[in-house]
Length: 196
Image (tube, rainbow, N blue to C red):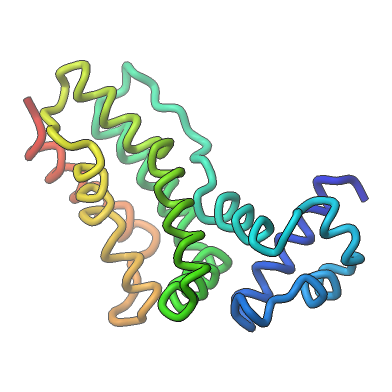
């Protein structure tokens, strides 16, 4: 096994332990056993349990989008691709389970809450949607006064409802073509409100 495969197995085990047992019960011993690795191997990759879970959250929840917008494409098409890929990342089974666990842990564990808060602020600066909005505002294509708030609004208008449906089962989740159309409608409304 190479280092990439070892690290992947450790992160898979950590994700499984967090989802099933919570942060406190997910000890380095239990993660080592679940991954089929020694505890020594875990510490070769991660200096602490906190470091392991920070990496898990960054790589599994805040993973970079595998997309670079083509500047000559129309703005709706660029945004549609970005938000659709983000939906694919967020709405898969593993990420939804991980997200549910983190939400649960942040409400009862101040240490986990602080980890998530720190990571969210760090990742927020590098989010491709925020970078894209900044670029469009600077180019004069969109009128945006606060990029961070605009990014939050865009997320709410396109993925907030579908994500909530998946997390809470409050209504049937949007999937496939229904999800694509819902995202397109949110993008159309957002761009209309922010066009120059």
